[in-house]
Length: 316
Image (tube, rainbow, N blue to C red; front, side, top):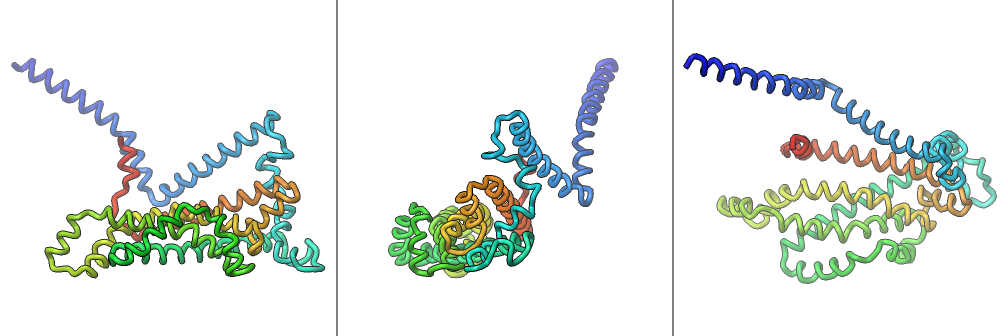
């Protein structure tokens, strides 16, 4: 009996030792992850490594002769000469009669002015589309008559490409910021209305029944139950549409509705300047990444009560 107890205790101790040794790396990694500043530093490191890997493969293809530097210049070519690329961003001065490319703001100032103009159009269009889409989506489900009158038209216009609305934007607003903002709003509005309706239909009936049991009116149910319930999903939709807004504004600017990043890309195409094309693409990518990062931070701040599902899935 004593031998059996001793063996059982030894086997239990052995299993416990193995489990303890296996849990030590996990505990150490969790401890390091919780150290102040280490979390964002690790994410920044992985981001830089990901970009460096992509750029390294591109540079390798150039070094092996697989990529023609005249058509696909590697990053060290189109990123090394900022001043030469930045002067092409002086689109506002270039269209003035009698003004040369060298006049006006410097290369850095030209890039900042162009980036600010495009960013403003994206931000304003995204905010207008979000407010209108959520308002219309809630109204469609709140009033039955609006559902019958508005939803078929929204569904009919939703598949229409934003490019098809470009002549309409120019007819209505002419040249300037307004047509570009209109293009962003039209490109996002219909899809966000349908997404809002889908989020409302997906609200748990238990939440609505509890509110009814407590004597809440229809207005209170929508204001205090349904709208807060769809907020996480709508922020995710907003994040996805952020990239769509950047795509659409480049198309709008490339047609001459106003100076911006899209007009620079069109200039690069017309002058057959691949370095300028990839330089502009890099700038747009950095801007989109930065806006997405800020939106994710705001999402975590606003929806502080939601669990981190990403960390949960990593444990599978």
